[in-house]
Length: 143
Image 1 (spheres, rainbow, N blue to C red):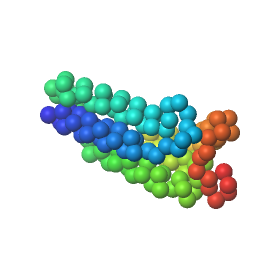
Image 2 (cartoon, one colour):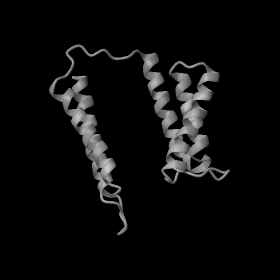
Image 3 (cartoon, rainbow, N blue to C red):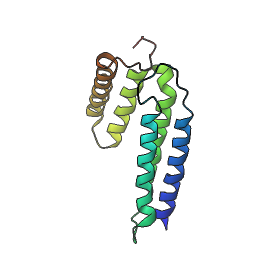
Image 4 (cartoon, rainbow, N blue to C red):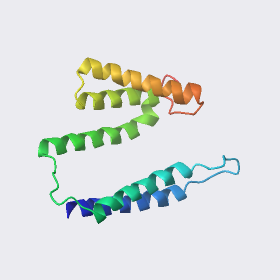
């Protein structure tokens, strides 16, 4: 029953996500697909994935223990904090800290997690901002 409840929740979330994507305002100068395409695609894939546990639930679901659930809640809290930190601290710093924390919680040693966080942040910045010329949230240092 819990698989079906999760599937229905994901289906409702995907419907809300697609609805919100249709509310994106577009200007008269836009590319062929437009800014709505990718969010609608993600919402559609979530809807398709949500149908599977509704139609074929696991007869004996194996739920994680309380310690693992706390880890999941912590990861969600870090991602929520990341969304609030982006406009204030900028992409590079926010992404470095967030990916470092998540790497650490996934089992990396603190120094390796810090190196991974900085590497991920700088790597994404180089690809998306410098190579693809996409705008990312600017931090207090201008990048």
